[in-house]
Image (cartoon, rainbow, N blue to C red; front, side, top):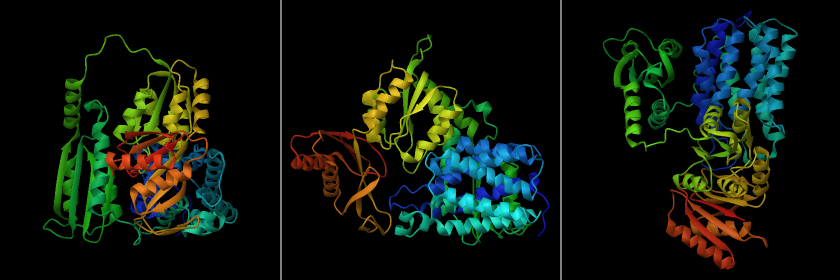
Length: 562
């Protein structure tokens, strides 16, 4: 198939196909996480990030590819979640820099765009690591550059980019020993390869939905729909500002019923619905297609579904009405406030954490705003931007409390017009310790320095359950076993929650250890936390041990040693 250029039509289709590809394969990408912990969310983060980019593209009416590429980059920037999502956003930021003035893309334009994408992605990471998504984009771009020097066929260039991405992906275990040890390829690199595969499929006229792609089951589909719906109706929107007011869900039994008028084709089915609204999810197997969309025309969605089969489920919610109800309830419960506006603080701290108990603890120490998130639910750049704005301060410090939130936080600091610093706390334990150095009247620089200095005084431990068998760091880990993770490294494994926690703390103690803080999560209780505390005091009865209810998911115990 010979294609001389990529127009707005092809580019939009490429983005939509890539978003769909990542959505369908998110769980597979998640499964490539090196640690066998229940927080491998690279696929989810990349999918949500690209979905944000797709939304911006779908809302852009320009016929210039350069404008659409800019919209994609902006959407990815604001929706980027986790380090993988941020790096993906930087790849397409570089892509957009190269194409910003282009009406359409020829073979050389496409090759140049991926070279620019590579350069921007590498610059965005303080210490670029080979064997990651960076290697995949670099090798793919180089192949595109070499091919463009020999042909003006856009398809040939895209073929070379995708094919060499596959080659690079297979090499990642050789470049990053931990991948080889565990027996997986890089998850971020796999996500990017899926994106490039979708681009290549569109330009070659191939069917986008591959047979090996993951189709969400009923529970997963419900979870995605509930998350999308919850996000839409829980934000403090003016109901009149909701562009598409009806959350519409249908489930169609393909080929059945009296009104069937068309054979099911995913692209045809999806493209029509994409023009009716946003927040679109379409998943299917051979028998069923499920739809979630926000639209002004629920009747058209329902009628469209009936052209392909009978309706097994229909659900329509008026989101404007729901939002009005939420606002009314908030106003009824809102305490009386002074007519005088609150004076902005000199320097405020905001944090990312999960668990009602942890949120209360952080706020008691002076944190102004806490964004719910962390493992399995990394916030987007836009979420963190909004968090910074909510702090009502002249300066803001962000505690990410998770390594996978660092890049999104840094990106947010660049976007927001409030002076913002990131104190790179890798855990809630570090975040709590950092707050001991906080002075609300101090300058941004003074607070950043004092709080960052405190990070080195604490060791962080996490106890969780292995989700698969693996061999790592000379440990043979079986699915279902408990793991004690100390500062990001698996230190102990066991079968008893209390004993594994005590064994983990034993690895963390040294002659300077004085204080232990135990945060118990929603998978355990205070009695077990007290048993852990008693076991720690048996190790050293001069230690001070505190117990707090954290309510955090995923980790029954978060334990710090200072």
